Image: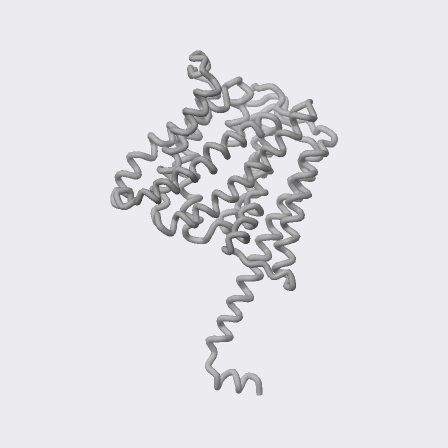
Length: 326
């Protein structure tokens, strides 16, 4: 998604129109699947559930994806992937505020979680304010012949970094709200379709308000169309559905465990597919973000282990406890 989106934006397609087309295509793909597999769940939705899903679509898709697209346009596909490492940390932050997560700063697990938040902030600051030496791509020939995606304007680079960070905040809140909505709307497929359909309507009004030139809405056989087809047919039906399924099964923070692979694969893909080098500051910032992620995840794992040990201890009969003490 990062690579295709960056290539599409570099080819000149309007970001808002691109997002409308991908959400509309995602709706078309999801509609028959939802009717076939989750017809009963669709019919049982209350007006309150529909309103919750509509509001979630504004936060996670309409606002989140538009802001993310601008952030990637002003920076790079690699930095867009690096920003995803902030999402688990911001998700944990909002989960803590909503009391889905607990932090005990007197224990190592709590200190690891707090340390992860600090590393996340440090990583974002490095990405935004330190570009460092520019490392040129390893290969001269690339599949997508676009302009170099690094931005020479420091002002645009900083703006892009903070737009990506704002996206991480909206998506962190979005994941927590998904866990809340899935309590009354138990089908991840219905939730995914409802959010995609709602965001397609919302994105249309955003796009038509910003770009009214009919020629900008025309599609041709180029990388922009390929990006729309890929995002609409694979990212939305497969990626978003699986994300909602994991949130339902394991909670909003657990789904973040594979986030660093996003950055690794995008770095590799940028070298082969895009004329897209990377700055030393981006590498340092990305490392800090990965460390922040695993610091939070280690804290959660340590916390879960302590809880399991405590539960096992409490389940031992009183006579056995006395004998063990003796």
